[in-house]
Structure formats: C-alpha cells, structure tokens
Amino acid sequence: MKLLSRLITTTTLATLATTVVAQNVTVSDAWVRATVAGQMATGAFMKITAKEPGKLIAGSSPVAGVVEVHEMKMEKDVMKMAALPNGLDLPAGQTVELRPGGYHIMLMDLKAPLAADSTVPVTLVFQDAKGKQTKQEFKLPVKAMMGGGGHKH
Image (cartoon, rainbow, N blue to C red):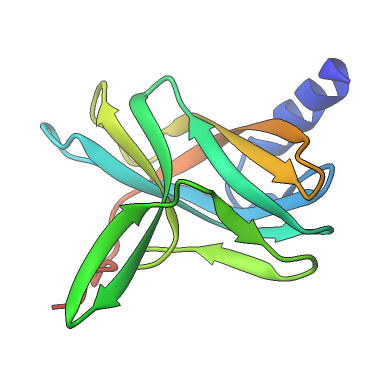
C-alpha cells in the first residue's frame, strides 16, 4: 500500500492542475498562496470530492508549525475566521471548494517565506463515516496572490 501511495504521490504531484485520487477522495485545483518576508501564515485551497461521506479533519506540513482546517464567514457585517475542530464535512458525490474567503487549509507559524512557483509538501488527513483515517501527501504549487483576494471590505 505504501508503494501504491508513493507511486500516486510521485506521479500526480508534478503539477497543480493534476487531479489526485486517494481511495475515497479526489483533490483537484490545489494551490498555496505565496507569502512575503515576515508573513507567518497563508492558505491552501483546492476542490475535494468524496465518493462516500467523510471529513477533512487535519493537515500537516514541514513548512508550517501548525496546519488547521478553517472557515471564513460573515457574522454581523464582520468577516470572521475560525478553525473547524470537528473537521470539514465532505458529502458523498459533492465537490467542496476550499477557496479564499471560505473554507481553506491554514498554514501557520511558517518557517520561511513561500515563494511563487515553488512547491509545498502538505499532508491531509481524511476520515470516513466509519471513523477510519487516511493520510494523503501532496506537493502543492505556490502561486502569487491574485488581485481581489478573498477579503471583502
């Protein structure tokens, strides 16, 4: 199984546009926002589709001290961001989009700036409806921040 996992990882991580299928979960269009010197956090974004109900419950990366599943939402005209301690639900057959201004993976306590056109290793932890957890490794491309971002004032 490790060999198959490594083969999938090696084969599919070369480009961001590649779709990665990990048993029950398909991840596509994944990327990490580039940072500048002194910036201690950034976000990772992607589309996730699960064949069966499950959750995205955690993450890790050697470039960050802390990796969490977050959401941003409006509360009384104020945009608030918070960790999802119980994970992000992945309904069967529905694509859940992690995007700026919504659900995302937060990489915090960065150990160095993340330069555009580099890649970042990220491990995501998924949990199926029976409670079984699986880890999937990705090498996500780092992209410069696009105009507009996810914050609306």
